[in-house]
Length: 65
Image 1 (tube, rainbow, N blue to C red):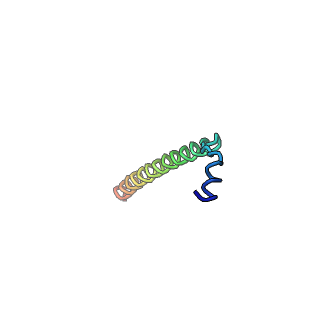
Image 2 (cartoon, rainbow, N blue to C red; image 1 turned 45 degrees about the vertical axis):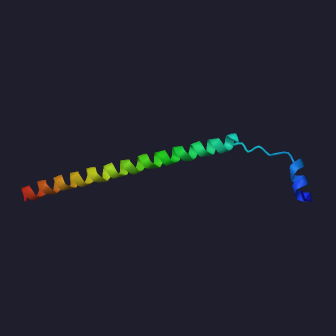
Image 3 (spheres, rainbow, N blue to C red; image 1 turned 120 degrees about the vertical axis):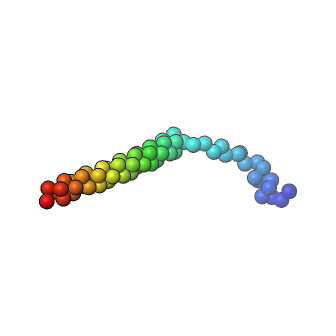
């Protein structure tokens, strides 16, 4: 063993744990991503509904003309 290995062998092993802040941050990020996906789907639905209404209005105007 060289000197570095001897020193490393005597150092206490550091536990790696998530802090409450890290866990909260990960949960918050997941929630934001979920909300973003919801907003995206609502925007798509509204776009489709707008297109349908526009087509219906166009048909009524064309028929009245």
